[in-house]
Image (tube, rainbow, N blue to C red; front, top):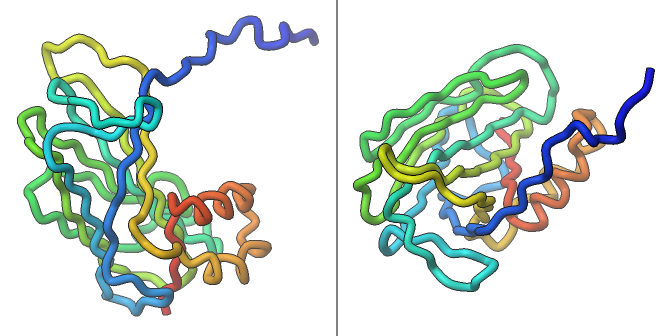
Amino acid sequence: MGLQCRKEYPPEIIPVYQYAEKLTLSPFKKVYAIDDTIWVQFQTPDKTLYDKLSGRRLSTDTTFLNFFFDLTRQYPLEFNLENYAEVIVQNGLNVRFGPMVAPMDQLTFNTGCNDDPYFFKAGIVLKKTGVFTLLPGAVVNPCPGKKSVLPSSFIFTFDLADCNKDVWLPIASQSNNGLNSYIDVGIDRKEVFAFKVE
């Protein structure tokens, strides 16, 4: 069987914008208990986002944000579709929360086109024990009736001194999910938050 060395693939899309924003997370702990709530919040001063490429805030008033949070139980690994947490959302957003793929729950929601500034506050109420990672992300989409948006990437970082690499390292070799180096780098960059629930 012959292959065409990716000639049939569409060209890679290079982002025109690389948005980067900070999330607050409280309370910061290494170990939580069942029924503890982790609050994650994001707010901008206006309807702008920081672009790393230009080094400035850009107006995004004809767009909305599709947010997602991946909550993955890294240890012990059980490939069951189950909820590891419940979610509380404070500003009336229409959310979807539940198993995405085993062993990951995903919280997704959209901001409105008229929201000024961007704001959300969500509480993740922990319901299962284990070692978990929390990975946030977002996609910028055009509001209805608006032109399509230019290609962009979006990285959230946690506004924390560290993201608990010492919680992740003891179980990294046992996690065995094929993403160990990705998680290591994500924790170092404060893009992934690791924690334990007992």
